[in-house]
Length: 167
Image (cartoon, rainbow, N blue to C red):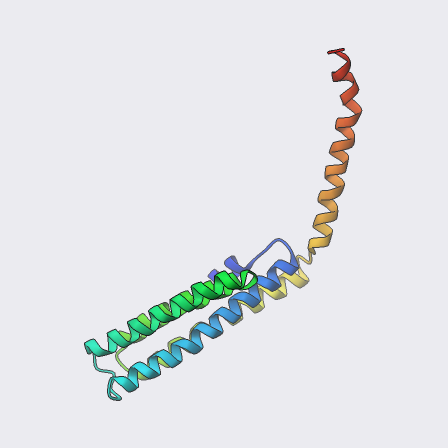
């Protein structure tokens, strides 16, 4: 949860919302693919959670296909690149831990726990961003624009003094 808060935090409310939405969507899509991947692996392994080579080959192949899809979609949809990055990292993180799990029940609990953990972290960031530090990008842009204009005006005021030395 703490990592979600640190990663999602942005200097403006709009940035927080976009980054949070990307992380939530990426985690949700990654968790759903993990459910599907683990279910397929379990089924192909004969309905058994025994540690066989077949289990690792199927899971590794499906994870590689997923990583390729996430990379392609991240390049195709630049606004959602972070979401696809999170989705691509969520699957191996959950799958590798789940494949080493002693029983199937703990696998589904781990996948659900990650999604709930990220969701709680995002809710905390949204709450703080909207109530404690409600800074919009428009306010920051106006302040920066006013600062630039002030610096330009100061430069123009002292410019004749510097130019007159060389004339």
